[in-house]
Each structure stands twice: as C-alpha cells, then as structure tokens.
Amino acid sequence: MENFVDYIRVYCKSGHGGAGSRHFMRTKFKAMAGPDGGDGGRGGHIMLRGNQQLWTLLHLRWYKNVIAENGENGSGDNCTGAQGKDIVIEVPLGTIVRDEETGEIEAEVMQEGEEVIFMPGGQGGRGNAYFKSPTNQAPEYAQPGEPGQEGWKLLELKVLADVGLVGFPNAGKSTLLSSITAAKPKIANYAFTTLTPQLGMVQYRDDRSFCVADLPGIIEGAHEGKGLGHRFLRHIERNAVLLFVIPADSEDHRREFAILVNELEQYNPEMLDKQFLIAISKSDMLDDELKEAIAAELPENVPHVFISAITQSGLQELKDLLWETLNSAVNSAEENE
Image 1 (tube, helix red, strand yellow):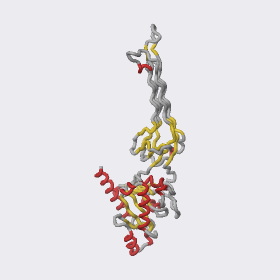
Image 2 (tube, one colour):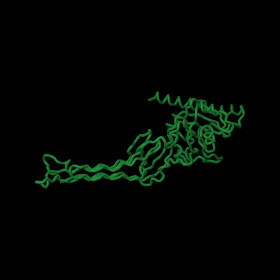
Image 3 (spheres, helix red, strand yellow):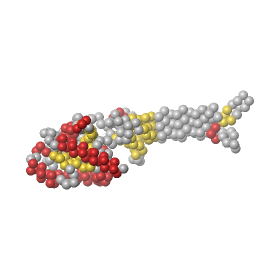
Image 4 (cartoon, one colour):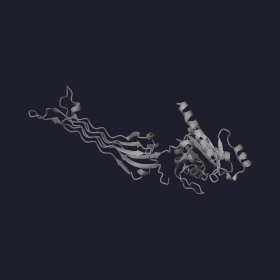
C-alpha cells in the first residue's frame, strides 16, 4: 500500500465542435441548386469510468495533460463531420473531480462501469442546410462549432471502506490493521507513520469479509486543516462504522475520545450519525482491575472492547462486534430509505 495515491492534479481540455458547412449543391444545369452543407461533429468528451479493480489513482500520476480530439467540420452533400474521440479515464470507485479554481465537485463515480462526463466536448455547428426555410431558400450562413472546455481539475479518492480506524498518531491502528487483515502497513513508534490510508480485508466467519481503512492519525485542529486534517477527514465521510482506537496508556481515555469526536463534528456534523465503537489497544499491559477502571471512564452508549495485537487477545471479539455493527448500520440505512 506504499503506492496509495489519493489526489491527482490534471490539466484537461475537451474537444472543440467542428464548424458547419456553408455549401451549395451543384448540378449539371445549376451551379447553386440549394444548400447542402452538413453539421460539424461534436468535440470529444473527457469522462470517468468506475473500475472496482483499481484501489488508487497511482496510474494517473503521469497524466499531466488530457486533451480530447476536436470534431471535424461538416461538408457538402449534407455530410456531418466525425465526432472527436472521447477520452475515458478509469478510476477507482469513490473518485470525485473538483474544479481547481472554484473547488466545486463536478463528477463522482460510485459504481462499477459507471461513466460520467465531467468535461463535455463542444457541440458541432449547424450547416447551412439546417437554416433553409420557405423565406430563405439559399442561406449563406453556417454556425461555427462551440469551443470545448479547459482547466485544471483535481481528482480525489475517498476510500470506500466499511470501517474507518480513528485515533491519534501512535494509537496502534496500523498494528491492529496488520493483525486482523493481510495488509502490511508501515509500523513505527512515532507520530504520523501512516500518511496515506491503508486498506485491508478482514476475513470473517463463513467466508464473509469486510473492508477496514487505517486512516492518517488525527490531531487537535484537524478540522481547520492542521497537520493532515482535511485529507484525513475526507476519507472518513464514507465509512459506515468508525472504530476509535485509544491506547491503554492514554492519560485520559474519555477526553481523548471526546477530542476525536469533536474534530469530526467540527468538520462535518453528519459524522455523528455514524456508528461509533471504541477499541482500547495495547491492553496486554492491563489487569482486570485497570480494565474495569478504564471501562467506567468510557461513554456508556458506545460499545467498547479491550484488545492487544501482541497477544491477539480480544481480536475475535472485535471482529464479531464490527460485523454485528456493520450489519445493523446497513439495515437501519435501508429502513430510512
């Protein structure tokens, strides 16, 4: 997962429409028998196509300029010009396109095979045959083609994981992910080891599975863009369940949870509608008495579990809790629709 790329800046230019033709039919006996100028062809679109085999935007790293073909001009005998060739960019599910200047979201791809035009080509101009009327039998006028669009676009990937791991740097999220999935994130005992999201599939009972994303460590002020703030929070928006990982050696478990929740709320109040769970990591250092004391500190309405990636204790209990919560989240979402 070292090659996870979630943000690409690309210059895009859709094709210009071809010009309509100002042409008159010629016959043996009449040099200008009537207008027969064809329409110009449409300029090429620039499109996204969802591909569930892709997990990152890495393959677009070298796409500096994406330029679609122009439409061809119309010609006589009512011939329409050929359309410019469309450019289709394959992207992972969960990719959005923003205009760099306005920040506005212009397209979003969520389904396998879904195609979205985010930069349409210019329409071809009408040929003079189109403008013929009873009062104007020989129009000299034909339309020029419409120009295409151009500009810098930002392609962003929001990770489509079922469970997002939330916690301060060095909370033990990467270690947990490597313990319950086949993912191999970088693990080290310092802040911001995880600078890009790490994805892993958890194999559950009866060949079932779900996806977990370890997201970059959050810090106070993330909602203001401090540290990795907005890049981190962007990925949480689509997780159904958020698992707050709080280390056993934290000075104040309840306050740490409250700070994390506050950061999410400041960024987007809808985050509070998600299902919350708490995992107390590194709990191999705790005896039963300490576990009871920590449990008493935690919010009563948020389920919690004590885990240790080193001794593997509590991991199956955590998987069961995640699976149960995911299914209840899906069911309640379906009921609300």
